[in-house]
Structures are given as C-alpha cells and as structure tokens.
Image (cartoon, rainbow, N blue to C red):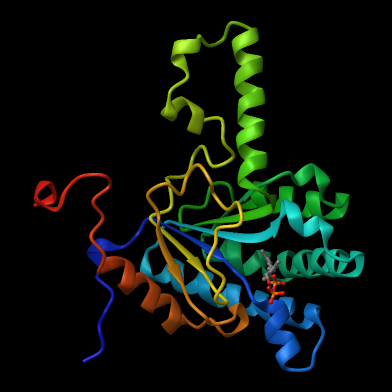
Length: 244
Ligand code: FPP
C-alpha cells in the first residue's frame, strides 16, 4: 500500500526553491519564459494542495537578489508573468482564505509590481488560511545585513542594549519575523544548494532535493517530500533517547 501523509505530523512551514524552469523549457525547444509560465501553473497547484492538507505557511523563492543579473528580457518577462499571475489569481486566492506576504527588497521591483503586491497584501491581510509567502528580490545575506543595520540604528537610539541582542531578538529584525522557521525546504531540478534562501531560518530545516524540474513537480511529488520529512528523526541537537 502507498505510504500516506500523517496529518498529525505536518510541517507548519514548507519552503520551496522552484528551480529548473529554464531547463524544462529548453528540453522542449521553447524559450525560458515559457518555462516560467509553466512554473506559475505548478505553483498554483502546490499552493492549493498545501492549503488543503493544512500547512500553515508556504514560502517560495520566486526571484533572488542575484536574479537581477539575468538578461534584461528575462527579468522583464518574469515581472510581467508575476504581475499577470497576481492579477488573474488574486480573487481565487482571497476566496480561498490565503494570506499573501512578501519578503525581499521590493523597492527594487517596478512600481506597478510593487503596487499590485501591496494591494494583494492589504486585501488578504485578515485571511486565516495558509500564508503564502513570496520571496521576491530576496537574498538571505541581504536580509541579515538589513537586520544588522536596523539593530545598529535601534542601539544608537538607545532602544536596545548590547545584551538584548540574542538569537531571538535578531530573528525579529528579519523579514520573516512573524513566520516560524521552515521545518522542510524543498529544491527541485537536482541542484544541491540553498542559494541564500532563508539563511538564518534554515539551521534546523530538513532539506529535500528532487531531480524533477519545477514545471513537472506534481502534488504527488509534494506528498513524497512531506512523507520523506515525516520519516526523518528531528533531533534538533539532542540525542535519540531524549526524544522518547
Ligand atoms: C528558477 O528556474 C525559477 C525562477 C528564477 C523563477 C520562478 C518564478 C516563478 C515560477 C513565477 C512565480 C510567480 C509567482 C506568482 C510567485 P531557472 O530559471 O533558474 O531554471 P534553470 O535553472 O533551469 O535555468
């Protein structure tokens, strides 16, 4: 019999590096933007599926700080895809009680994308279902450096003392401040690295890698990742016997 997800042991927060859109498109003789558009379809499917099974937070790496260095036509094509996706999906997202959140340097995004994002965040802010957290123009180092600057400012203004700066306090200065650390991080397409995704938050995340390109990543692949996570022993620095 096929193994099933244990609903009692669901990760609260799953984060995904959606990789392989370009290679998927190339293998089909298509351009890279075709791959990104297909990636949006996968994302819609996985968001619905994550919400349905009861996951509370889904974070996706949609655009990294390094992605600005891609050819200009790919960057602007991605912005258009993003804009169109928010436009066409926002009603359904809102109806499904999804709360949208964005992390990253959004000031860098085109003005129309920024205002569309802000509208989506405002519209969905009181929703009680899954939080769909989109990492856009995001990098873990960017986030950490920003946090340090804000801490320095608060220290200068006597709002905090040096001894107040604990691991917990530090995490309240990150863009993920109201979101628990991800228990599971999935990366598609066979690449075995985190590429600056949730650097501070991922210390105890279980990492799951699959060779499947993001546009081909199915509900079944998602369940497989969760089942794999559920079969791991999360010791969080302790020893097995202490967990019993
Ligand atoms: C990685 O594949 C994918 C991206 C850089 C972009 C992913 C973005 C989307 C799926 C759209 C997101 C939309 C919303 C609404 C959040 P790649 O281009 O690095 O693929 P490759 O490694 O095969 O070249």
